[in-house]
Amino acid sequence: MQNKDRRVIKKSDFIILGVVICVTAICFTLFKQPSDKALAEIRLNGMSVLKLPLNTDTSVNLDTLNADFPNIKLVVSDGYIYIEEADCYDKVCVHTGKINSKYQSIVCLPNKLIVNILDYNTYSNIDVVM
Image (cartoon, rainbow, N blue to C red; front, side, top):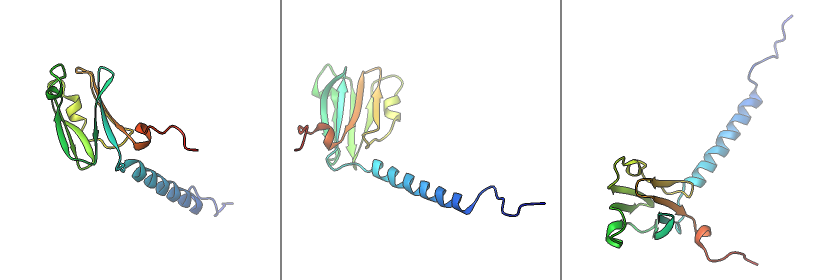
């Protein structure tokens, strides 16, 4: 005696899978979109040395800001920031590519450089709204 109603995958399983895929896609697009007020914070030796807005295209050579800084060229373009040139030996920071989300960062260990994205809420002076 066989049971004809036994299936491995049911119709309700496909509906649940579709909902999970849609929610994942929505979350991915929300976290991936850069904020108009986002800043890139450049830290050397643990100290913040520069903040660049991601909505303005620019390029900066760190060694021109201070002679003690490493020879690194940062580029902000189309809401993304990336390292175009670096004087480190492994070039991991150059190969990291473009970032624009607060969950991404660029790290250059030989030069002790970290590039983080700050959202408006991260660098606002307002602690509490009452």
